[in-house]
Image 1: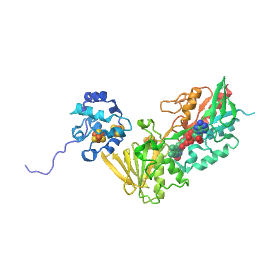
Image 2 (image 1 turned 90 degrees about the vertical axis):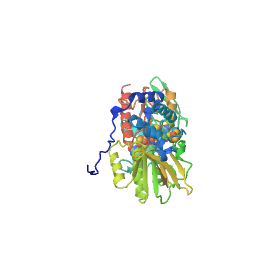
Image 3 (image 1 turned 90 degrees about the horizontal axis):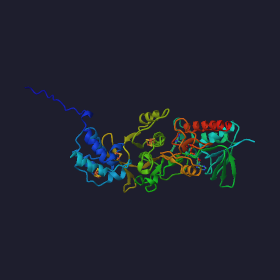
Image 4 (image 1 turned 135 degrees about the vertical axis):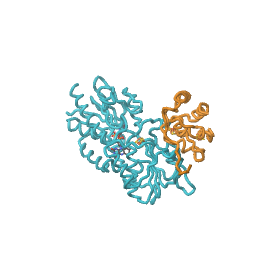
Length: 105
Length: 337
Ligand SMILES: Cc1cc2nc3c(=O)[nH]c(=O)nc-3n(C[C@H](O)[C@H](O)[C@H](O)COP(=O)(O)OP(=O)(O)OC[C@H]3O[C@@H](n4cnc5c(N)ncnc54)[C@H](O)[C@@H]3O)c2cc1C
Ligand code: SF4
Ligand code: SF4
Ligand code: SF4
């Protein structure tokens, strides 16, 4: 068959109905602060791993809440806790990351 | 003899209320702790949304209340209620009685040095919104360079910040940042100006127009990300870090001037007053109104009224409207007693 150079791109559309709510609720229980992120970006701005891996607590949470795979982000976190120091909502981000590792790995 | 109405605080709220009370036939007595009338507005340069003169507004009010009794550099020693009359004792020895007292003690600007990561008072070129207004009013400020190439504005300094103890949005500072960004672009057309925001809250009449203006006519850059920290380079420039949350990438930029949008927090006097005469403090730290919808100008105590920023963050027109309403409420209260 002649190859005309066309191909089907994978859709990047998110499907909220496919989010694993049960697991997410379990996470909220283990770290209630996960509910109050206001996506300000302070965590990612201060994270030493962010420029190299794209890690940020904000992004990690959004990935989970939108049903995306979170593992690639987590792999570079050093659990240094800098993000906890800057978070204006006072979220215990370290505890959050540890529980995400437990539930989503 | 005309009846006294004691007003605590001679900002625009206290002044406007005094003006209305004079018209209604009372003898307003303003107790102001600083050396001048006008409160915070006396320190501002131009007011949004029409860039009208803050100084002219205060001057006009001063003229209007020329007949009122004003005690400057004066504080309240005690405030006591016996039956329906309050006895007010001032620290200058004066004693007044008044059946109604208006609290117009306003707000305090959040102390930006408490957010150590922003370097106010540490680095040479970090100032606040209030410092910038003072400079535009003619006060010298050697923190502001003669020819800045790039300028940053940090929104929400001490507001929307649970760690700083203030969860509330100060509501005037987004518009103030955009106003000041435009004013600096007018003075330094060559400079790049960046506003770092979490959300742009431009709720009021014509505020959104400021935003469009800043983008279209002044080329101000808006970056959605909260500044996480400020540092200094070897050559004395500021370097800030934020995340561009719309792109999801960490970002840095070097600046010659950084302006912190300090928020509005309740004047600590509110707490003292509250203790003295059993007023209530709301969950946001400001004085608690009897009802936040139907009776914002009334306290839980008979004869004690509120106007302006002592009950929450307010714009000037909101403050003035509340002051007029409070004067009328006081009048009605006194007539019905
Ligand atoms: C940076 C900045 C810029 C702003 N720009 C604008 C603008 O352009 N347009 C606009 O609409 N709004 C603006 N605002 C909002 C405006 O400043 C307020 O709406 C206004 O100041 C509220 O007036 P007020 O009289 O209630 O309080 P204040 O201005 O705080 O006045 C209170 C007065 O009470 C006195 N006082 C306090 N405690 C006592 C006491 N115990 N005894 C005696 N006296 C006391 C104080 O000394 C002060 O004089 C701005 C706010 C900020 C922070
Ligand atoms: S704990 Fe992890 S995510 Fe947080 S700042 Fe450190 S490396 Fe970054
Ligand atoms: S610093 Fe806190 S509130 Fe801001 S994006 Fe990160 S986790 Fe969310
Ligand atoms: S008005 Fe804008 S800058 Fe001020 S606290 Fe609210 S969101 Fe932050």
